[in-house]
Length: 326
Ligand SMILES: Cc1cc2nc3c(=O)[nH]c(=O)nc-3n(C[C@H](O)[C@H](O)[C@H](O)COP(=O)(O)O)c2cc1C
Image (cartoon, rainbow, N blue to C red; front, side, top):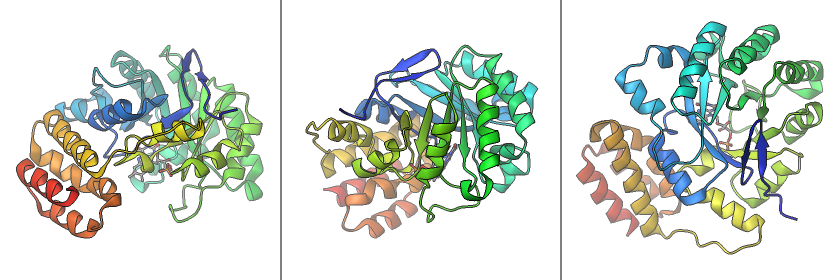
């Protein structure tokens, strides 16, 4: 039996249980649109949006964070904040902007976010977290989730059990667990045993996240008993990855796009960004962060990235891509 199954989260059911996760600086509509076009995951996430940014929106914020394209699939808006009334307001706004689900970030390790009491810092304040979740639930009809990092179960099983209980009791519809502690970098492997701890501890669905890049790592994640899996970094530059994983898990054939097709996808990604952000300058600056992922298969990857880092116009960008990918 395939491990790819329909996924019921709160009042919504999705046709499969694979999700494209949030990536700051990347997960805006041009990226999610490609993911939907090539993979049809259960849903994709926005990058983390601070409640304050959403409430006091600038033109830039509206375009970068809130825009939901008409031809993309379901989107989970991820909010960051630590104030219940701001979160209530931001939840209402995200719902009005068309969020299909809304997540609260409780995993961000960045100092600037933690110092405001948000991100992973919220895990040290269970009663505050409880009020934040109830504020979200009272202000939307869409499913609400919490994305957390883990504590080391061997040392603090009680802590994780407490957090799991608070999230469930406050009424979250599901929980996303990234199997690392907030102090850990990506060199530390994801800890599946700690994801399994949450799966065993709560009755709401758990989505496992961390280090999924192929069907073998996906199987390891799903073996924790989690209801679904979230893939973040590996989806960048290969928007077909989730479709490929679904095909492999169902023992169906899959045709990976050629280098030329990958080149066209990269150009489409940056052209869409340029339209969204009203200017190729911003799009190219952003492309410098993700072009390397599209270049995974290139033999001259380093040289390609170097040239992209120095290019300034869309015309130059397209010409560099065509030189290296053809
Ligand atoms: C560049 C970058 C940006 C990220 N931005 C966010 C974010 O905005 N919100 C969030 O919850 N997690 C964010 N994450 C964490 C990922 O969503 C995910 O939890 C983590 O990368 C592990 O999954 P992966 O191994 O599939 O990448 C970010 C990670 C990276 C590398």
